[in-house]
Structures are given as C-alpha cells and as structure tokens.
Image (tube, rainbow, N blue to C red; front, side, top):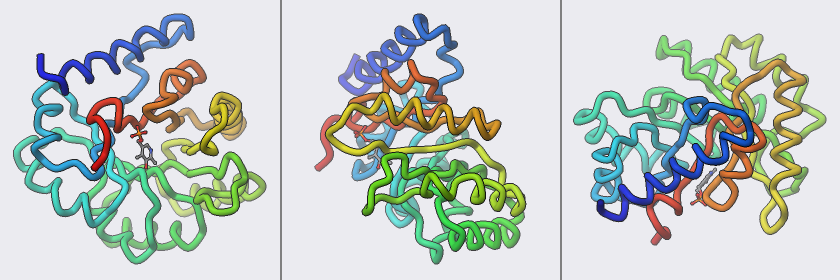
Length: 220
Ligand SMILES: *Cc1c(COP(=O)(O)O)cnc(C)c1O
C-alpha cells in the first residue's frame, strides 16, 4: 500500500474503532478529505483508494482543480468548508454539493438568490462561533435561533451545524456544546473534528469530520 492509501485506512480504522464505545455506526460518519493546497497528483491516489468525499476552503482554488477530476470521477462529492464571500455565492452553488460556512444574513440572502437562479438547492451547515471568538467566522451563539429560523424560511436545506473550536484548548467541551445546540434545534448533522481531534468529535456525535493533514501530510 502506498502511504496515501495506508493513511486513509488508518483514519477510517480510527473512526470505526471509536464508534464502538460511542455506540455509533461508522457508516453514519462521513470522512471529508480536506484537499486544500494539494494538487490533483496528491488527490488522485486517495480517489483510487476509494475516497469520494472531499473538502476545499476556497472557491477559486476548487474551481481550478475539481472540474477535471469530477469529469473523470462523476461520483465525487465536494464540500466547501471555508468562509464564503457573498459575491462568490453563484460560483459556490455551481461547484459544491454542501456548504459548511453559512453564518450570516447577507450570505444567506446571496445563497438563496444563487440557488433560485441555478435551480439547485445546496444543503448548508450553519457555522457557529462556538468559542465566542472575536476574529472567528460563525454565527454568534445568541443569534443562532433567529438565524436558523431565517435559513428555514429561505428554503435552504439545513444540513446541520458546523464549528471550529478555539485553537490550543481542549475541543471536547465545544463539540459537546455544538451537539447540544443541534439537538435543541432538531438538527442531526454535526460537522466537527479535524486531524487533531476527529476521534473526540466522533465520540461526541460528529456526522462529518474534516480531515486534511492526517490524510495528505503537511500542507506546503
Ligand atoms: C484546513 C481545514 C480542516 C482540516 O484541517 P487538518 O488539521 O489539516 O485536518 C478542517 N476544517 C477546516 C474549516 C479547515 O479549513
């Protein structure tokens, strides 16, 4: 096995392993391979090893490398996990199957308009500023109930909640809080967990983990 395939097997094995004590089914956890900064030559081996779900954090970068790969592998599923500017909503709706960074009314408006125009509804996770950090994207905790009402009213398919916990601190309490918020609002999707903490996230209910470094190695 080459190193990419063995890393994929290792991450999948870890997910399966922590599912057991958590009494969860591995099939209920979607592994999103975060391929940002990596070119097609790094992505291809992962596709050949069976991975079909990928994540990118920039619209422009994804538009440059994914159309060719998708022509070759039509069953690829592409997730936008990074912050999205309203003026890129059309492009994002055309390119991605899921958006994880819906976090403010102006973007909600732009996405609803883009989806109407394209005749395509792209399921969105609402990103929550779970650590209440000044510089961080995400909907403020206090604004979440009202914002979720607006998303539902705009007829945007609500996939669940997403968070990026504060750096350099224990992630588990933030994952637990996101899971509670989702349950309180009747949402089942939980996009949480990265290379350093995806096992913890799965134990606490993540349905989508976003893993880059543990699959691709370090980013250039
Ligand atoms: C880059 C990124 C990831 C993956 O991070 P790794 O630590 O490389 O696994 C996950 N989520 C978001 C939002 C990212 O930008």
